[in-house]
Length: 304
Image (cartoon, rainbow, N blue to C red; front, side):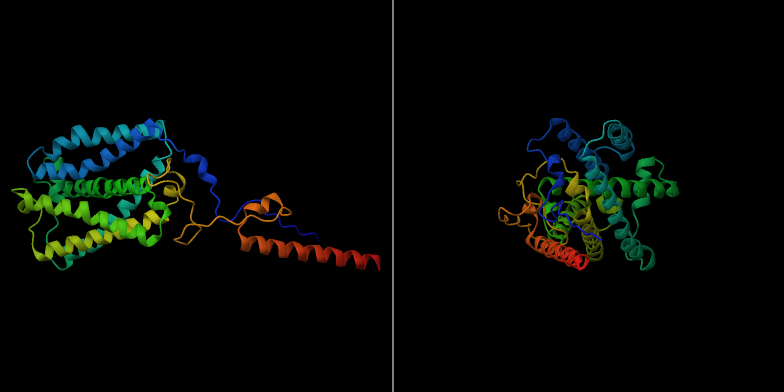
């Protein structure tokens, strides 16, 4: 039986998606990402605006958040863009991180009773009916997961991709996501509660316990979001532009260092082997020699 191994594709250092990363930045794509970031920021800003007495969430949700969300969903369906996959992954991991955060938070609320759950009350700000806490809980948690958690995930994934964090190690991604979750997200929440006249009455009182619990929750959220960013194929394959920090070679699977380009082979090396990494080339060469020796031995046997 004749066995042949052909090195048709380089194993490491290759970048099949390079054509998706043009050096320029198309204006339509940047506008699309800008709209996603605007929508991602509005749910959190709506809470702060309501607590500060600038505009109620019932109004901001009806005239700003929901119409913009509907327009962006329609635009994404009718005219998809490469960056939409990164946005979708960011929203997904933001929701997952928020759910795991809530596993910790709701335990401290309902099991230990260390603080109250203000999400149902926040939901009544949206519905405009302060007496119906059941509807407030449904609307509030939808707002929390899709708007707050998903919005933070979209913002982090877009900013991190723009600065080339997808080329970094898992540790760097997690540290960056945790830092982003603490500042500006957690710092903005605490600033709203502290600075607003009715912040501690409407949301939760600022005590060493609530500060510690809310910070731990945001650390959990950032940790999950960082792991999600590092694992996301979309941020490596679908971000449509080179990072603002400049082009860098792709990373091999499972490492945090930049992949070195393979050294050129001698002129007798087949063209496909010129781009292969040294270890794979050596393995291929040995296999080829073994196959050649086997065929020669078989021919000698037939001659005898």
